[in-house]
Image (cartoon, rainbow, N blue to C red; front, top):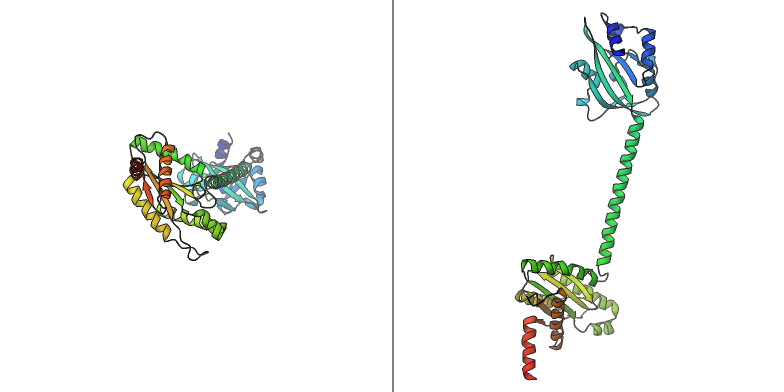
Length: 345
């Protein structure tokens, strides 16, 4: 009704020169949303009280000014920053729900959802536009608060996830050597074992023990002993990458599980580890030399549990210790030696 009355009143006149009747002015002021009437030159003819109150300005501050000269801050979504009422005048089509920011003289920011409709008459065509401005500052403030809260929650969640990962590492890692601790090693042993069975692929296990480790502690002290264990762990980590897993099995013993490796390959790899350990240098104790003994087993059809694989590797390690240390004994060698011992007995 208001739209029709304005258009009818403007009929046959220049919209910019229109003097609105007091009754119509009062009617426009009853509208709860902001409203501007502009002419075809973008000049403001009238702004209602709701809009003036929102922007902290008076009628005389805005009437006669171009609407675009007000301190608007266009949103990124506006087409080439064209004002919505300008678009409505140019296209002769209503424009809806354009979000824009307004900076008041007091330095406050107001958010408006703007709808613009061209005003036309039967005689003169388009004479201007009616612009409704719904103040959505509170809604935008709440939305911004929610966004900030979501950012804080995401940041907190990421921090918690990062901390949980750190705690998981701390829970899984042997603090001295950085290898998996015994519990974490066994947690990873079962899925690797099951995958080996599923694909009928080879799986090698190396049990590694530092020779005469007690003598190292007794002669040089536990600090040097700790350095020895860290050095052995570093040699193993440098030599074995994923998918192999390395665990500190206990004391001076380490266990390495290597998928896709058979007995011959496992024995060759073990001899390489032997050579690397012997070549290791110690900054804290010049002249200290190390050696390790290694037992090697591989998964066979007769083994039903992953613990059996480790048990066989441990038996081979024990035989390597008996045979003078600083050597590698594979499961094949173990069976051969045991058979010879049985014949001699």
